Length: 179
Image (cartoon, rainbow, N blue to C red; front, side):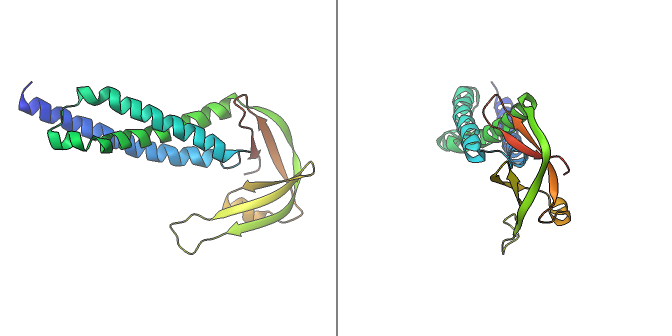
């Protein structure tokens, strides 16, 4: 293979890897936004991120023989592997979230009483705040995240419409119907 073809191929591979990384980051943000009212969001996130890291690592090892790098680039191949791993994390988190949402069935839709509300704001703009509603659902207090406009229009003592979804994957969640 000529030098110009190798150079063009490695540039295309680098461009693909960077696009994969940034699309994985944006998909990860979207995926995290979809799981905010899951019953076990940390376990759910850990599973999909772990699967993303493993599959990204395996992907990087499987395509390594097809990429042509010089010795210095080959020594720093961990950067390529990390880009693919982070991209796969975002991709799998979003795909898993979409599968969970589409496979879930409504279990309960009813009005529930807001017993408290809390707004968390941080000193620095780089940290996102949270609008929390605490709702009494059949004697159990559930904490729900919601949009600022909905949080502002809701008062303690109001009844809000919530739907509880039962997931065959085991990751049940609550959706605010009025939001």
